[in-house]
Length: 235
Image 1 (tube, rainbow, N blue to C red):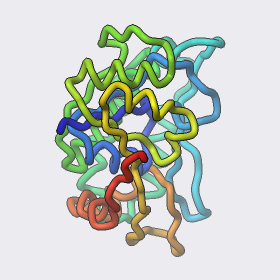
Image 2 (cartoon, helix red, strand yellow):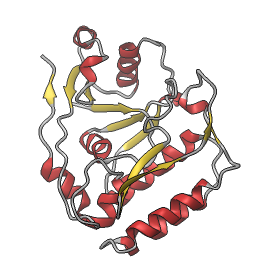
Image 3 (cartoon, rainbow, N blue to C red):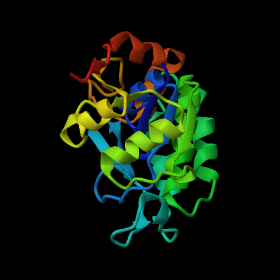
């Protein structure tokens, strides 16, 4: 069995993103679909002493651009703002000193496109978490179908897979029967959010993976795996 997972490239993704990545053999960043405003493609959340806050990458977007066409608004000093927010709100976390240097190096790099920012941060966070998986961009593959499910099937085939791991809500937008006809096993992620020590009182779920790393350090991947439930096979 070779399991493929596909997900849009996100900025500083949350825990469920990396839980999916850790379960697959190949993780494909789907950068060839339309960019959506006010979702997680250019923003994510960190915990603060007042709850949580967004970290948003400013972009210059023109409908209907694909994700890999969206450019960064370089007039905005967003990298400095994001790094300062991370320093401010995580400096008291148990493993702050272990991870702040790679974060600073990430923010020092100048990138023109959103997809480059997102690919870099995904690769950085997976490395810091100890996840070793092949990661590819959909735009680098000769996908023929522009049908939502057909595109996924093309990607699985091109990556040599026979099993596809979808998010838990994948059945709402995918043609399950098409997977059956193509002989591809379809699984749905059943993510259970772990509870772990955080700064600033009551636990706040659905933060960026940064939150888990700063608070749990080298045991972060074990925290994810211990909470994990087996994927559900489509019926």
